[in-house]
Length: 527
Image (cartoon, rainbow, N blue to C red):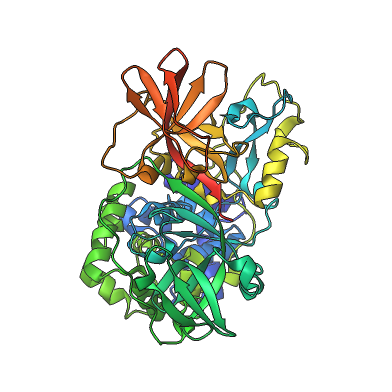
């Protein structure tokens, strides 16, 4: 179906014609306003450079009572690409991510419990516990969460985050009770907090000094510690309670630069309180640590990723946007700004004083908007009912209960985070029962992703133990083992680790044990 026919069908589903929509937009917003929908819209939409503006799409949403994000999808804009590319873009500074799920009507693959077997082993393939089930709506899965978590990406220059976290890791922030936890100094020792200050965000341990004063420090880098006055120089957004750490790339050999300490400017520059779009863009760009030239270069990366050069923004264009009071004419540029500066799409529109309360509330039906459903599995032996319902005491139900929510905004980024072309549940292994792991990164880990194409350990003698590549081994007795590994002669050698089993472990390669693959991604709790 071409775009003109699709727009005609969506409007027709409300018993309207384009002529009537144009009349209503003139009556409601004024013929000379930005919200006016021209009667010759059909002739314009065939040209990608003449796609309606966000004002006109908001008018279409209001008149048809269909959601704005669905109207954007009709014209080829998937808003869920914003959090995906925010997350994947290289960042020098730690960033607060947009973790929104824009299309809550999207169909997502889901799982059901397999028939329970023996006691849960310490390490096992996730497919041993879960089987594919009927797809679920994103809204249905979101309703199961507590909706209290924030998410951030650790920047390469956030020295206070190391060594507990790694550059490029995705962290989850529990926004509840952080102040109370900090006040109990004994219980807060060693905890990591997510701080917001006028220059951005940082992950750090905190030592209470006074009622409103704390010391941010890194145990390995005491020279980087800094004293902060809460409420004026910074505020605590929450406690970091989980990390998703990519480990498949070779760690940087150089030491990250020491970040600048928060200045003495009050936190009124928070993007949550920016008065207008100029302040929002300027503040967000400074917090991202980007010059106009660097932001322009990153926009080229976005344009190449999305295959549309309209997403590219020259440095002069980005400078001009910080003097405007309205959104860019092209929606591609608006989306680029959201990705570059980690701004939520609707936060951007609110800063432009767009009347979002007048947007439609109903989803466009699946047959009128591109919203494909994953194929439902056939003949899968599961213990739960149709549609993948999981009992509260089952493996899946317990996981959802323990973690509080499923971070659905990550779903399209897992392949790149794990370094796998086609990420699937068969690449995931449960390691939550391993109480004596062979590596510090695996302490309190719940899941790992494994690249099963790598069957031979890579020698990395120049790297310290904590940065050695990790592998998953299958022993002759059917049990799994995870940790660093080297091939010495014909033996697989797992070195000793202070927190793991005593002594190095030797296995005859292919006889006593074999390498299943290299661990590329770790999901672990931060306690």
